[in-house]
Length: 604
Image 1 (tube, one colour):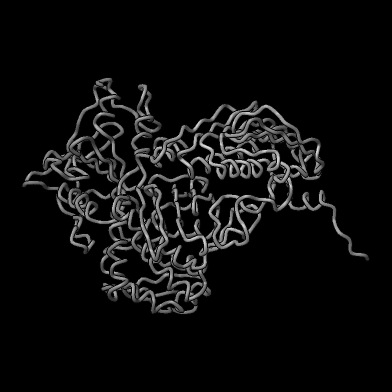
Image 2 (image 1 turned 135 degrees about the vertical axis):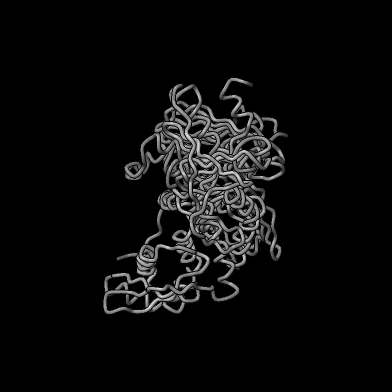
């Protein structure tokens, strides 16, 4: 077999397979060229999901006839000279335009602001059609028609026009977030016009244009630096989450990237605050010396490699966690909005019926177990629900039962003062400007977990000896796995022993859990350890084990609380970082402003 030199057209088509994977890839490359040319307005028009037409117009520095002739040749670029150690532009490989021209019908018309006239060049399937003078405004217009007509096999791998159009929209959104001083307009026959006006230095305003106005009210600003690596941007509060990871944006020196390491760091920062199957919303911008990051990993330039990945990960995780601890302990505004939508328009929410006018109010004294705000988290024997020496009645309508509290003004408390307990699980509290509804089980679960987490890093947790050991029947292999980690569990206050081949005896449980469902807890831990499998991994998962145990030892739904217990729970929530969501990431409370309530009744 003889070795031969491939033709220039075939070389370009091979390169196009990596650089131009789909229409959105071409849009990304063309927008990057416009930005590198200093454009402040970029218009993108598409048809047929970008397969029939892509047109990108900009008001940048433009090109003359000589530039156009070189622009369609591979590895011709104005952005680097002879080194890859100091790349400060989005493009630099000189492959985009020749790659597009090799698989599509490409026309470029351009004029420099100081040029007397413009020029136009056309290429189809890698073949030069013409290079001639042309009327043109300052800037550049790149038009791509019939993408992949020269490589029809590639067309078979493209998705539907709707899906390709959506991918183009996502590219434009990422670019818009990265460059808030640029006006972007996306239009075409296959879409409604999408416009992002320039916001200048107001980055949050641009992010709100892309992610929606709700993000502005649920975002925490980030500004951190470690060893000359800077991180700015915005992290959504944990309760403001989404069903997929499409709302996580990362930029390195202004370059939009989809780097697995960065996305992994975001997940790690939100660990134990986001429910399973839900994803945080975050916009991160990393600034780093170009010599310390490799952007030449892949022709598409969406992946990067950091010289010190641990430093970058630590910066991201630390900055987000610090921000969440500082300002993340609040309910997302969308929770209250959802409640408003449920009641708006006079419609009754599913499962709720108003009592008929003749429905009587009845009073009863409800037993409760006292909530301990001191950190003991135990429960005493049932006692009368008393406040100020007066037994508090329970107001009960046909569908709603509530323990009503009429004392303690909301004062300056962030979560207000308890006013009622409804359905023996939800605490209704009055704040200075609205009301808060608290899920008592979810809230207490988080408080217990935080106490256990602190104990993990300081001492062996105190335990309480069971008068009669709890025997838990399990498959023999589950018993084996549990006993391998008996010492680690013992440090958490859970003492277990083997009780025959297929059973575990629970001798002690963590004291702070109080009453605990030992059977359920042991079975769940056995399932989780089976999934993790190794002792080293269990060590890394001790906080997750603590979260599991906390869930089994928290105030249960259906338990009546006295007024002072409800208020004590609210006060400790205010003092505990992360109490805005439970260990599984679900919100522990939602907030409704008085102005919103008044709107429901047409009072404003």
